[in-house]
Image 1 (cartoon, one colour):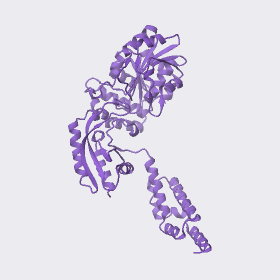
Image 2 (spheres, helix red, strand yellow):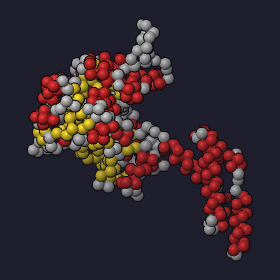
Image 3 (cartoon, rainbow, N blue to C red):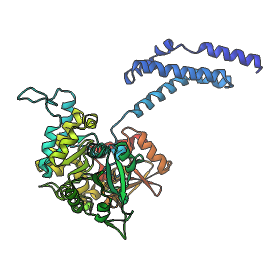
Image 4 (cartoon, rainbow, N blue to C red):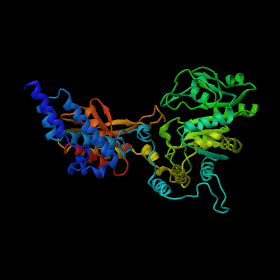
Length: 474
């Protein structure tokens, strides 16, 4: 074909492209309208047509271009854009990883009763900051403070939007413009490269390091005290352990030193393990510190997460002496960090479950406490169903689960996993297909197998899991 004929054919194809308005009237495009916002659909159609127009103007072979146009290839582009838009939304997933507190998947799922109260709060007006008796303005987390104090046996408590915020509030409210003493062995870095020295600088307090990476004694804190010292801080090294030739000052020693010199003391306990009365102790977590024991040591304030071992929505809790909590409540940062109404109600409802003796019903605790025999039976049942699907090779193996989110990092819980191989897809490709499917499934990949751990399956997830695998073969 001559260059002139080629150009003429290309111009003809360009003229045959529909306008955006014409494209929007096509039945296939109108069928997309129920799944995407109208203006977004217009943008997707415009971009798809522009992409095809650029291809037609380029060196694309005219025959291939005509085939693409006759086959409405731009419609496939629109459909892909809509699918990508849906995948970008925060969506419910099946967590088959065996990591109970999976930060990437939202950490602790709340109890169904808690979820119902949160949904009611979201669609309603609430007595959030108003006293029903007087009609005057009240404190938004007063009820949470009472519940935490009862549960932990402390004077008072307040809640903010996560534990990092709780630590920043404690540092700023108690030691801004002054010095905070911290062991070198506790200069931790948490997820997202947030380092304790940087957090302290942002809170406006000067870090004074004492001791060494592996050994810090109470004498090191005492020697570093000065008129500028405002806070003695201890940080639980939740996401790593230093073993061997080690030593650290106890909480009781730190609390006593603070009282002796009139300096505030704070312990960032991290994960928030609370072995409440009437609940089975989480003995499987080893030496993961207990919040009640931390407060009993005499420190002025303890900070911990609500969305980890407590099993509540994302929150950070500061509990301790009434005078200290009152100071922190007056900080300008407290208002910036306070909880929204839905999270506040969820935290309140979770604390009430613990207080009423139903703490073991909270999903996080229930998953951690699931007996190995029960996990094995669930794995065998799932394996039996999945063996019936074409192209899958399925067996079961003993394995381990983890708590996750820096909680008890060196504790591995016995479980039984379903191991799956696909006839055509490698393990990484199969795991990706599961993540992109409906419903999305997240699993582990080991030894070129996809592993499904039943420990982290919620009610109804086994049916969703099977539906996801069936969809792969559809």
